Image (cartoon, rainbow, N blue to C red):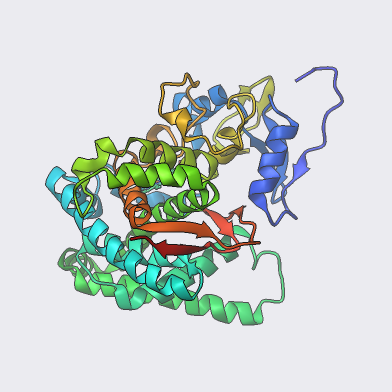
Length: 415
Ligand code: HEM
C-alpha cells in the first residue's frame, strides 16, 4: 500500500445481501492488498494474496482461530485421535469400506438419475434439491447405517432455511420475523427429527447417549456437523459442475466420451484413473465455485501483513472464491478451463485451496474428488445435461456458495 495515499474508508459488509459478489468486487478493486472492511461493526480484513493465505491458514495458524466454527469444541471429534464419530468416518474411508461406499453411492445415484431423466421429459428437474437428498441418504447410510429417505426432504428444506437465516443474520437485523420465526422453529424440529432417527437407528450413537445422557446434545451436534460438512459441500460441488457442463456442451461431450470408453456398467474406484478429464472438470469447478467459499478467522494477537497492522481480535476473511478468481494469479480467472488442471501449471501455494489449509483443513480432502468424478461421469454418461433457457444462475455466498436461483436442469436420457 502506498504510505502517502489517503487512508481508504473501510468497506462495509452490513447491507450486502450478495456477500460473494461483495467480496469478489472488494478483492478486484484492491488487487494486491490486505483489504480492510467492516463486519458487524468490527474491523475486518480480506486476505488477497496467496502467500498471505498460507500465512493465516498454515504458517501462523496458531495466531488465527476459527471463530465461525459453530461447534468449535467438537473439532477434535473429527481428528485422528478423536471420537467414535471419527472412527466411523475412517471406517467408511478404510480402503474396502471406501470402495464399498462409492459402489453403493454410484448405484443409488444411477437409479435416481434414471428416474430424474424420465421426469425431465415433463420439464427441468430441481437438481440442487435432488442431489442434496440423494447424497444425504448415501452419507447417513454409509456413516451411521441408517436409512433416512423418509426424513431427507424436510431435512434438506430445513437446512436451506437455516443457512439463509444464519448467513444473513436475519433475526439480529430485527426484521419483523413472526412468520419466519415459526418456519425457523419448524426447521429446527425437522433437523432434530432426522438426527434423532440416526441416534435411535445407529447402535454406536445410541450407546454413546445412553452411557452419558449429558452428552446427548453434543452427539446431536456432532451428527449434524458431520452430515452438513459431508452432504452439503458434496452436493453443491456436483451441482456447480453440472451447471458448468450444461453451459459448455462441447466439454460435456468430451466428459461423456471419456466415461463411455469405460466398460463397467457401474463406474467404480478402479475407473478413477481413466476419468482424467472429468477430474480436471471437477477441480476447475471447485476453483470457480468452491462450496466452502469463505473461511473466517480471528486474530489472537496483533500481526503485520502486506504492510498493514492486523489488530488482536480482528476478523480475518480468507476466501477460496476470491483467491481462486484472482486476476493476478489466474489467466482468464472467470473462464471455465478444465485444461488448467490437466497439465502441471505452476501455481503459488495459497492460490487454490477449496479444502482449506493447515490444521483446520477438510479431513475428507483426499476422499472427495473421486466421488465427485464418479457422480458426474455417471450422470453425463447416459444423459445430456441442459440449462433452463433464459435463466441466469449466479453464485450466492451463504454458509456455502449456493446457486441462485436454485439449480434446475434438463436431463435428456440418451440411447
Ligand atoms: C466438495 C466437498 C467438500 C469441500 C469443498 C469441503 C471443504 C472444506 C473446507 C474448506 C473446510 C475448512 C473450513 C475452515 O478452514 O474454516 C472443511 C472442513 C471440514 N470438512 Fe470438508 N469439504 C468437503 C467435503 C467434506 C466431507 C465429505 C466431509 C465428511 C464426511 C467433510 C468434513 C469436514 C469437517 C469435519 C471439517 C471441519 C474440520 C475442523 O474444523 O477441524 N468435508 N471442509
